[in-house]
Amino acid sequence: MDLLEVRELRYVVAVAEELHFGRAAERLRIAQPALSKAVRRVEERLGVQLFARTSRSVALTAAGEALLEHGRPALSAVAAAAQAARRAEESSPLRLALKPGGDAGLLSALLGAYADYPRAKQVDVVFHAGPERASLVREGLADAALLYSPFEDSAGLHTTTLHVEGRVAVVPADHPLAARSSIRRAELDGEPFPRWRGQPDQEADGPEIADVAELIPLVRLGRAVAVLPRSLVTPTPQGTACVPVADAEPSAIVLGVGSTDRREAVRALRGAAARIGQPSATS
Image (cartoon, rainbow, N blue to C red; front, side, top):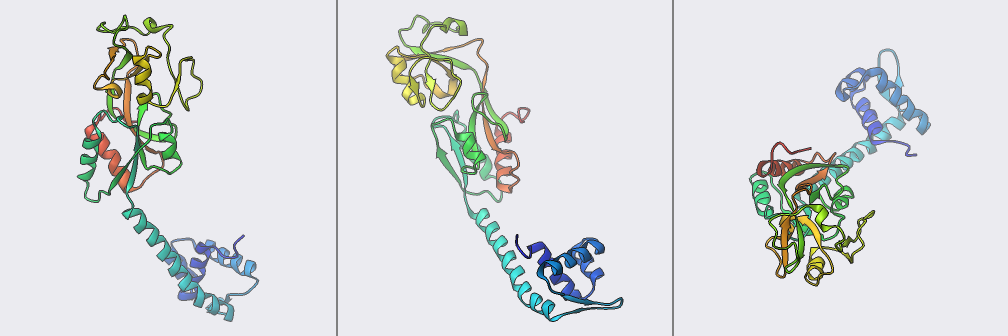
């Protein structure tokens, strides 16, 4: 355990400078009994007396003089370190993770709306094809992510909806269903659905793939079909057909940020998402 915490050092220095517990407590905005108790705990832990107290006065002992001499620069160093950290945070870019092609054409609008904020920071776009974009935010490796809801786990994130869209079946161009204006999910029973790498509890028994880029060649060969958000296959890849699935749950593209992230830049990015998205669809 540290012999002296920064908060306690701040208390002792305040009393040493004021030489009055009442004035020091007022300066620190705490109750005087709490301040007196905290100073006594410090003296007990250090094994020294810092103040000579009488009913009329408070004076520094030799130990108190020594602690004040070294305590002031120590507090200044802590304040300088905190300020440097804030400056570094203010100057560092925001990191936005998204699936390649997974923005439904909204990325430019989002960045443009964010740039309207007076203190907007640079935004670095991090392309990540796998399913771990939400985890990047939770682990502090990204500040925000564009996610497909409800398919990507957004637990622990605050989400703002930018776009809601239907889902389509991606089938070979010569598939019996390819010419239909719409189908129902049951009509795809028995088709080879892919297993998406990194996503557990999948009932599909088709080939394992990591992303849409791996899926499309397999669809052309008739080895897989998939039901996807429309924006992921716009324009329709050559050799395939995209047929709306009437009873498939809609998909939403959402901006996810840490639910406890209160940084101004992140709040501004959320505000930009709300401006270009669907105002009633935030959570």
